[in-house]
Image 1 (cartoon, rainbow, N blue to C red):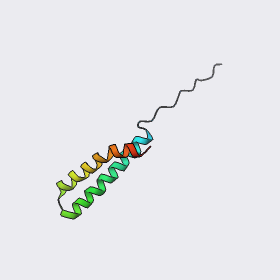
Image 2: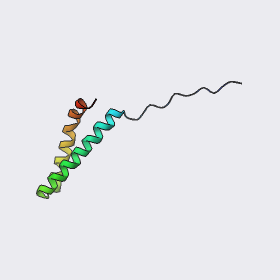
Image 3: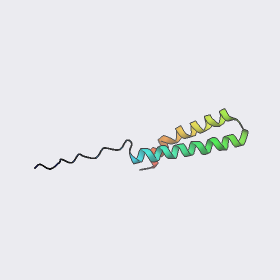
Image 4: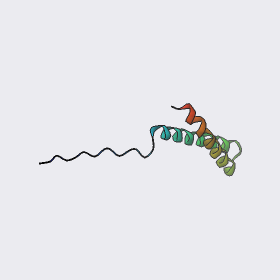
Length: 66
């Protein structure tokens, strides 16, 4: 009888570093968007501020979180 050959585990979809950076950027974008909306009640302005803050925080977080 031959024993079954174990298959190696499947690699993760994204790394832990990428997941932490993206999750933190999403949280930063949501907070900035909410604060912008509360300051002037402009939905388009809040969306743009949140997207800008989240997008600009990704390179900074990538270098800070290791």
